[in-house]
Length: 231
Image 1 (cartoon, rainbow, N blue to C red):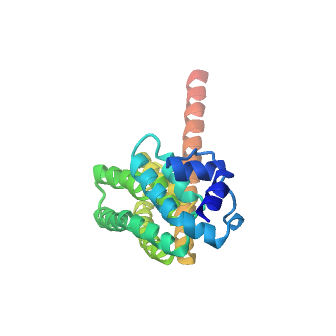
Image 2 (image 1 turned 45 degrees about the vertical axis):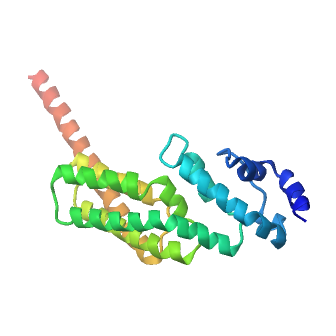
Image 3 (image 1 turned 180 degrees about the vertical axis):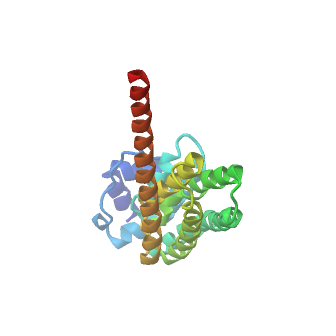
């Protein structure tokens, strides 16, 4: 039976490379999960888990980290038991991110120190809402969902703390928009969506007001110059 399964695997180049070479191309197109029988998936599952862990540990934090993002974003070719094993494997990363998001939220609350604002915002973008975590957030699993929601609630709390700054406060406003940009493509629950939209509206409003004021100041400057030369 395993010989038949190996023949089936050989028919799918991308999946075969992932399993046998423990590698993948970031542009690979995998077959549909429904292409395979339950028996084949059960046979493949331990091999898939082994490949998943090796690709993750080999490329995480390297110039080839996009392979990890691609792997997580793609269909997981394994049974429910192995899916739970993968989620458990990723849980340590999520637990660390939950704790970090709590610390960043606590650090920024009521804190107007510019260095701290830059530090917290940079960590939110690079360590909390990075592309690997965003890929994990998209997987439909209850354990991931619970931790994702806690991380996003803390992330939105940081945004809400920063939305007090106007566009004229260029550094703080840039940090605020940087976090919003990372949140943009993440699926939020209803309550989170309301909070996110409030921050987006504040950003747009402040940007528009700042632009109007800037234009008015430029016009006034030009008028004064014209009057000066006319006299």
